[in-house]
Length: 283
Image 1: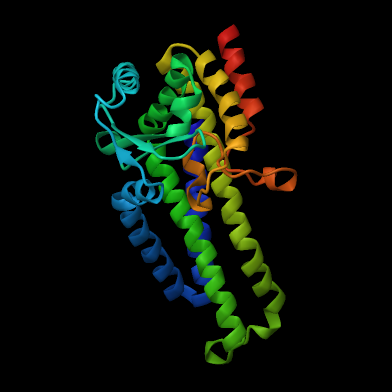
Image 2: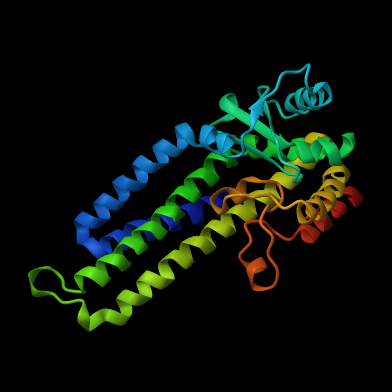
């Protein structure tokens, strides 16, 4: 069911992008928008992992440097029937982790130094299993594509806004946008918000799915449930200087938000995730 929902939302996001291009540029604009999205997705497919890892100054480590982490990774990758991913550590005190890579054969799991300092072995197993689930579910690719298209929609709306400021609302062939200025402004404001909401819905759906599969890979939901509670508290004590565009990659939201801001979080509420994991343990 999660796959169907994710696929549907990706189609909605792509159609929204092409529709905006068509609204501002007609059939040619829609075509250019589609080609632009296609090219960006290819670039994101090949290079996003390197970009993200470099953003957080993550370094690949050898088994001798972190033997316990490597042992956990090998065991759980075997459970998940996945190739052994590359292992990276980011020099951040904020406890967090993320997976990246275009497919299971070219995947990497990155943990922060803070998470190694905070979690015990069972909790670390839960976190690693969650990240391997993202790799198994191809979420690393899905969320990269999602972020790329959503970002392109925001950028397209921004271009159109500046074009309107400097070029007016006049159209080709005598057609004037002035008669539809409210619809035009509505498009500029609502389209980026709609894209963001679709992106958030996809991100939250993939987190729930990774929690569930991760519990099966680790053969216990308890470690991940305990880890999530510690990570949320630790992320509050040691906030991360994270880029908003990459926040969806992490196991817990590295950006702090309360009240209305929490409604636009890339992650489901930790308490809800823990509750579902606890119910799995009871069952």
